Length: 462
Image 1 (cartoon, rainbow, N blue to C red):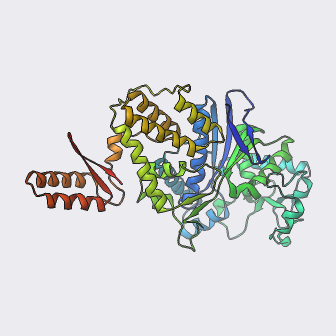
Image 2 (image 1 turned 180 degrees about the vertical axis):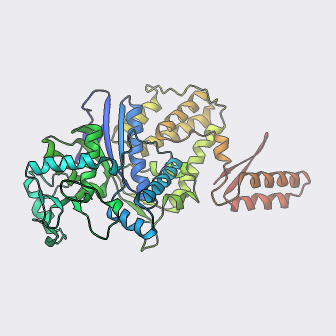
Image 3 (image 1 turned 90 degrees about the vertical axis):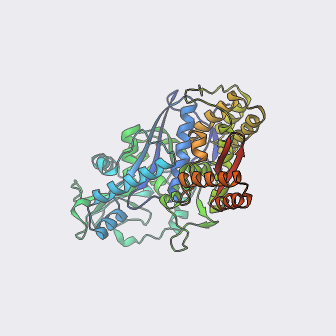
């Protein structure tokens, strides 16, 4: 079975056929860097990390571009509020993003362009659009895109121009000939800092958000490429506008497949600072290790709505421990061959799941079937397959004992736990079983379960 993906443009699952055999070019809209990344960002980046991992596992050479938006209204405001330059703010937040997503096992893309490095290409693209009558200079100094002059606008969102116009709330006094028109180049305002201003044939200003992605994507991947991805919230207007700009300039489709990950809720409500349920990745990493968070996200197919909750994270931690506990019982060397035989029935089922629009929940269920087999047979070969398939998803690559004894974020450290185990062993040796039970129960309250075995006592997080 070959890979099938849900194409948001056609609204159906399609067989994936790359433009160049054996190669995939993919662009994903990344972060606007003005603050720490939140769990919704984690869900998006994790989704496309899984996509690119599976494409590579399927034998494709992948060129993966995920951009950084480092010039934007919010960025300018935050830099002014903090009294620092735009570059200082975006460098700080980019470093924080890299630290946070690295903890989640998210691999770096092939290219991570910053918008400010591609202003020249953006201006070239605006010039092409103006030359084709799709862009016009407004009385306020902006350059806008004339939406109604682009045939097919709305094809990604599935809405007609009249439907989009009915829901539009942009005032017509902003220099736009039509409220649906969007800005390509923003004229500079006197109160804006100098590092937010760029010289151009259109006057001093800066690019609009939508033109940034079109320029970066086409510069690095060509005028047409295989996959364009991002969060469902970007489908309209951002991705719709990218199509209008890019296809208006080149006359050919921007991307053959459009992939969008589903929305994220927190405890079944939309995440919002006003509701008090807003969490940064860094917040969650204080309580849960990165691999637990990653495994938690993997349990939901990328297009499905995702509910983020402590109960779900706790359950995910228990499930991940079960996977690692099975591996811990087998003596696997770091040099063991983890090449996957896709003809193996378990591997074949895993592949079938991932080939059906990256169905990670079914793939994860195959891992648990392997756990049952490992526990039954104590087979190193089966354990190696379990670890190898986990690696495709970016999990199960730690030394099992190190993971299982890694302590609990915000709780007891490994040294303290080991010290309590020693005291408990001394209490048992003295036949003070009440004290031994008290220590066991105290550790359990901290999320640590002791396992007494002939070779000694070990512990796992629960």
